[in-house]
Image (cartoon, rainbow, N blue to C red; front, side):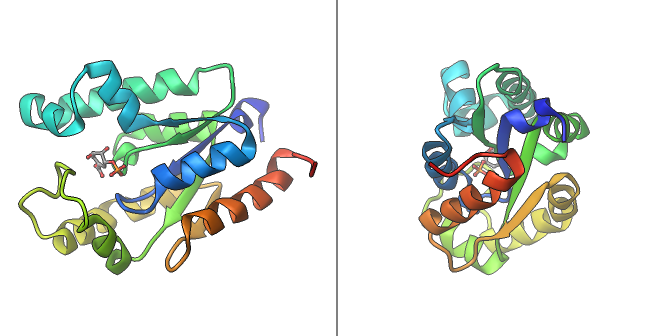
Length: 181
Ligand code: S3P
């Protein structure tokens, strides 16, 4: 693997797969800054993701998402980047992620995802919809895309975020050549 690819770690997976929480924990373990792409987009646009979708539509959100990804992946310092579930929709994003980051797919059963996302209803793609229906459809569209770009896949069903991040840290040590302290 090239040095450039090993600089950043990107977490991909469906909404509710734990990308933000696990990314933050993994960042601390790795001693890398953690960036949540949705938060970066919100800060840059001065509006929440929900407002961007409602006022400007999904296409504008996807443009902002692509710009944010490009910008974070060109950072010189190493980052753990939690992406949004739809990052894999554009082939340009998939190419960038593959070229410039070590990609980890947090794979989670639809049943578990539905349980998790049903606790919060702020996600624009879920508002007023049946989460099981939406996530089943998204899984049919996106599972192969996550798989296609993943350098490492971990099943997160029935696992605590802290356990997932520790497992990832252990397996990244060998990939990235990090020594135990
Ligand atoms: C989206 C997932 C969301 C957010 C936006 C679109 C998607 O991020 O980027 O609502 O297309 O799956 P999370 O995966 O962090 O919920």
